[in-house]
Amino acid sequence: MKLIRLLAAAGVAALVLLAVPGAGPALAANEVNINSPSDIAYTSYPALSGAVSQSGSNATVTKVDLALTSVDGWTSENATLTYTSGAQNSSAFSGSGSNVSFSWTQEPNYNGRYTFTVNGTGTYNGGLGGTRTETGRSTRSFDIEVAPAKPSGVAAGMPENSTQVTVTWNPNPEPDIAFYQVLRSYAGGNPATVGSPVGPSSKPTFHDDLSGKAQGAYKYSVQAVRRARTCKTESSDEACSRGIPGPISAQSAAVTVRATPASTTTSTTIKGSTGAGTTGGGSTGGGSTGGGTTGGSTRTTTPGGKSAPRNTGGYAPGGNVDLSQFGALLGGNGKPTNSGAVNEGTYDPDLKYNPSEQPAESGGGDSLITIGGASVPAPSEDWVRFIGAGSLATALLVHVLWFKQQVDRIPLEAITE
Image 1 (cartoon, rainbow, N blue to C red):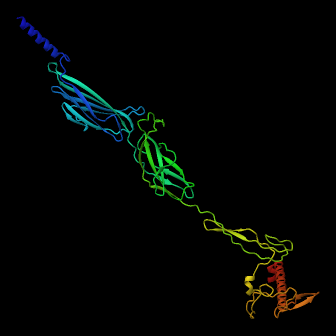
Image 2 (cartoon, rainbow, N blue to C red):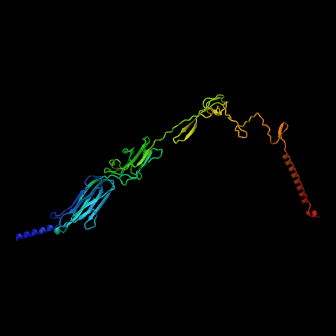
Image 3 (cartoon, helix red, strand yellow):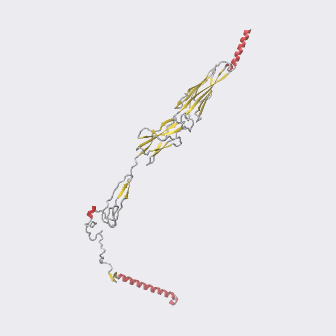
């Protein structure tokens, strides 16, 4: 009897232990595994992959929480994704029941240090204790150091007759651009950095001076640099010294340096003549009675081809112009002369006039009469007729006026009687 009582007591105790949660042996567990990422720096966005499994009788993974968090201290960029058993879930999850896999790709706007966290929840049948719930957790930290995109819209311009070049381009879409670096090449050579970096801006602009540079074509390109994980604050240039450079833009922006034509001067001197004069000479020598040499003029030719004469000596009124090259037209006294006779009735360009001679009387016109030593024209017959006609007209007018006055004084009746 005692043996039977001991066995019965042991059986009851075993049932009690099984009924108390956690009192029995561990029969199930929730496991969370992360396959990717590793704790390294990625130059492209990695897939965040792994699996959550639940062991035990009738085990089921009921929930999976994915979270990506920035931990670099200067940007808070978070992303989450949740799997729920029996619901329509994201394509990032696959599988069901006791094992659920995931592959999640995120592209944060900022480079930096990130932490990936996975929380798993599962259930299983605990026997006499009913359904039991298990949870699991796993984390992984890594770096994102993705290069920026190639700058677009690069253009270079240089005004005419200037050596100042202005380079512009479109701002990059990445919000964590540290700076831009401008590169220049000459005559088809390899591009090299020029000038100081240009900070991020809505309208990035760079100025370059090509004064003193060789003639030829200069091409410009631009490279963007993003912040790396060493950037702890956005305003710290020192912390961002290790940037992530991107690809260099195409060398499509070009300017050409041309030679500036120098001003050339050509002189053309008009030779003067030397001789006696009454008022003095030209620019060299000359006095009150002496001769001189007339000055010359200098013609300056500008780069545009236009010329502007400049009188350097002036033309003095004294002296004679050298006409020795026109000997065929000069007489024996060195003065121009008429080389041929003029036919009667033709135009004679030389007016033969001598002030000491009096003009001879012509055959026509009025004759001259002398009055008191002076010669005046004698009245002609037409003049006399004009005077007589005028006197007769005047007398007739006076008579008509007198007759009118008499008529006005005598009444009309008296005349008719």
